[in-house]
Length: 140
Image (cartoon, rainbow, N blue to C red):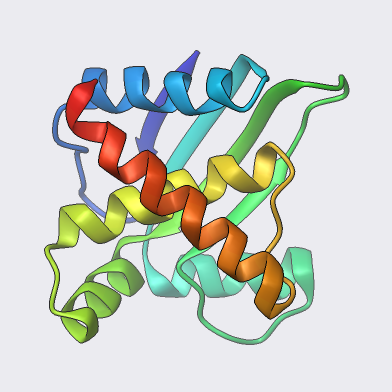
């Protein structure tokens, strides 16, 4: 099951049914099964506080992903996304907010299925996967 929540912002994901189908497609394409996945949309300040508290990082970020699965090949977790940061990134990249949000949404799932972005090579691989799945969004 995939659910979307807003914590300290007012945000409703457009077409959540399509997003859920797409994310399930991503998860299954990567050889995983979906258990429970919660997306929590929030502000920069909310995510900064989480970053400080849980990761001991003192900087803004667009996403924090928590893997709560205790079984291999199963997706279960919570993904926190700053809509403030997504908006700023979209503006800086001159792209639509929804497009950048989809990239961040799938980025979190890719973390849950084992992709990392700790170095240039892993960042490039993750970016390729994001691009691939973003192209498939329209078919869901």
